[in-house]
Image (cartoon, rainbow, N blue to C red; front, side):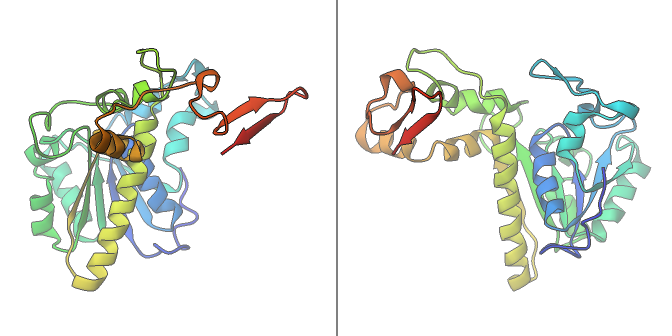
Length: 259
């Protein structure tokens, strides 16, 4: 991980404490780093589990020197610090860092941060201006709030696995797109909270979930379903409902698209 761009961009001078792992949270904080923020990634003593994720879609992600392509592709421009947050001293160090920061991001199951004294109310007491980003599977409320989740669960619960392929009733692999989309959504929410802080001087909590993000990604599909009562289905090129909204392979092996 490098941080050569931390002095450039619209978020220059902004510090982010990044207590995230795997992909959803790291995508968000990486985007903030790309815009110039100083991002300090907090890892456990044995590192983010993504460092040990050595195969992605059947392809090796191992690099020379003990590096990992999956981890590096999600954590560019970041600094790193290892803390044992199961100890009081580790938590105190993190809280001290938050007092000197603008943004805190975490993607643990709802309730985990609170049990460690790292929930929004805890850190707000330490730094009232903190913008707190929380990435979860199902959001902070409701019967599923504390359930574990990963990209597939958000994709499945939103129906995305079914509208992504042919209308044959089978789910189709979206290659964890929920992690990427949700990370983008969380970054957008945090940027909005920063704008609001510039006006009011107050921080706030930003909650984003896999499920909510994938519902949003569906665009007008669900809005139309609610208004018409007709459930949207999937389709493939060979069964497109509108032949002028499709792509076709030409005799020269190139493709043409109509819309």
